[in-house]
Length: 393
Ligand SMILES: [Zn+2]
Image 1 (cartoon, rainbow, N blue to C red):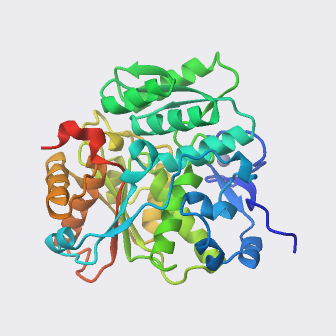
Image 2 (cartoon, rainbow, N blue to C red):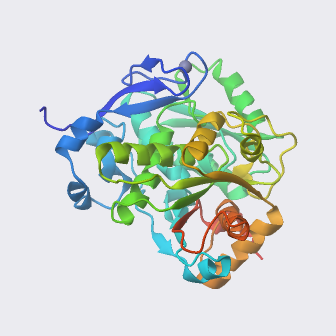
Image 3 (cartoon, protein in one colour):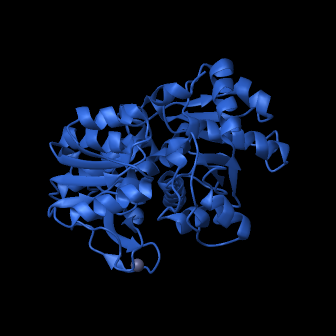
């Protein structure tokens, strides 16, 4: 067998129609408009690498480099991302009726949110393929992360976000040297502006959610880390705040790859997509048993990252939820803000409103009996509460 290379990336597949694409050229979406997913030679990885090898590597997300798309170690653009803590949450867990509750705390990542994972891998791979400028619409946090990693790579960035996005994310883009546009509207309006500008900007790659194939590969590492941190075992339930939903799609992809590698066994965790009641297209689709969502009219929530009226990857989020026996839950702003305070008071955790939505969902699901006291539940806190200090009180 050939020696193991840094990445086992083999090709890209369309997530809807299955058309195969060359992974070593810059790609956007499939000609059918759907996201492309990276595929790896997992048999080769299984024959050459073991969890024991992974254990001896540095504590960042690049420890899984065979399962990531960057071909050469020298092309990695890093700010020290990954291996965030998986914290026991006994007091809030007791209060919610799930004493075994764990929280994966993404607030410790560069730029303060889980967006750093997608940005690190997406920017590294783009730079490796010769891209010199990226552009994207954002609700704030992704723009902050991508502009920081673009700066680290010596790459230009163009970011468009709603004027109502958290001010600190705007400041991060500006200080990192991004060309910044503020839109009087939502992320869909920002997306239209970016598409319009890019018509006259050859050389810019559109790095909008799922419009390029590698952000999801970075997000996937949340799933890899959870499994490794549990001793190469999967929890019973993972609760995830879904805006664009790349993280839940990525976690699902990661765990299926680990099953195929034989590094974990048993049933996949039930995946829960949490949304704000003020913008809940996935919840509505789930309740109708639909395969796709409808655009949510007039979205409103303090959990700004959840304000995505029609995620491009909606069918992939729903597929992950249906296939694992999971569910989708909407929570009110009032409920999530109450849990944000409770997590700070009971555990000292300064979590973001999106992360707090998971705790509100867990309370609902325990009350309805969907969760039992003995379930091992992992809640994803996607960012630091410091980004949203105006909500704290
Ligand atoms: Zn396609």
